[in-house]
Image (cartoon, rainbow, N blue to C red; front, side, top):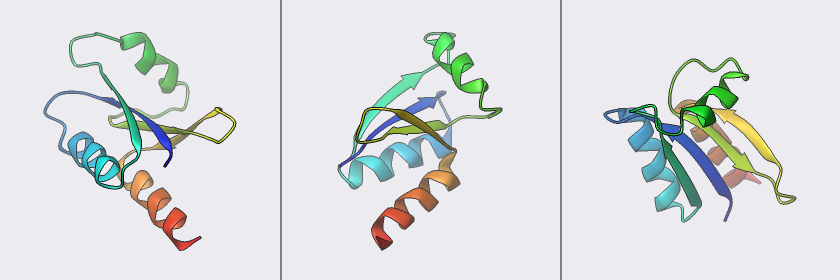
Amino acid sequence: MKKFKIIIKEDCGFCTKAITELVLRKHDVQVIDVTNDHNLREAHSLKNNNWPTVPMISCYNDDGEERFIGGYTDLMNELENQEEK
């Protein structure tokens, strides 16, 4: 089980799909909703990755270091690569 962080906005279909995939696969998920500028500082920190949309997904390595993944499609590629190992 890995730990993931997802920055979302309400009514984002890909945000919902990403959360659902991670929960179904029994991963630990931290969700940060920036719909109403709440936790907006967190979103701005990830903007440094030049990622303009939500979801903004990152995971934590075994040593606790955060690694930016990308959006929903990037997450699915990441999960598929993990399953192949």
